[in-house]
Image (cartoon, rainbow, N blue to C red; front, side, top):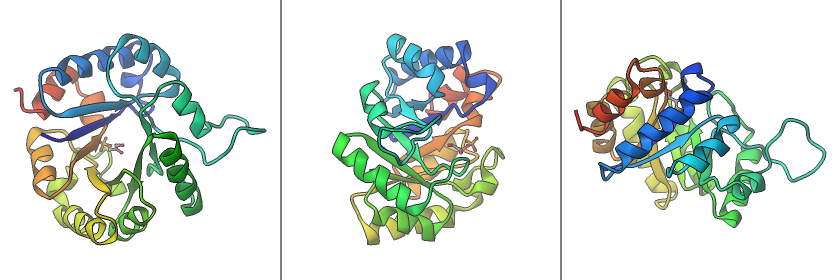
Length: 220
Ligand code: G3P
């Protein structure tokens, strides 16, 4: 039993009506397993999803800013106000500066939001852990969207990230992501010492997302 966070990204298959359908599938399958399954849909789809579905919702990104004169930005407090659980921070498709990651983690701590900081190698994982987020998610960028699971293709990066985090701050939990789609990829990630996985295309872009998620959690 572990943690699964599904990032809908900006995939057409995970937007609009499809986002709501997928969120409902996640809710249904969550109720059948002990795993914790959360979603990170597009901002535009969140309100409707949160009205209709009882699943923890995360943002895919948040800006390191206070309320004020900014255009097209998201303030951490806004996430709290609409009822989000937390956010991905520093995703490899939306990087932040180190000082900005620190700012957001600190804000989240005060707001009671969950921080999931994405990293690309062992050194950045250790650096992120030193800032004290709730989670770091190690995701080698070259494997993202590849269908090649990090837990199998590069178990060392996962194992070494877990070790590095333990040394720096053992309260920080570790996820891994990139190319995860099958139950065995997930189980391998847990065996490597992570708390779970962050994934996207393996579910969102699957021909049959329900089947893909059932397979991931071991119901198929
Ligand atoms: O945020 C999850 C992610 O970047 C991994 O993507 O498509 O390889 O599961 P994917």
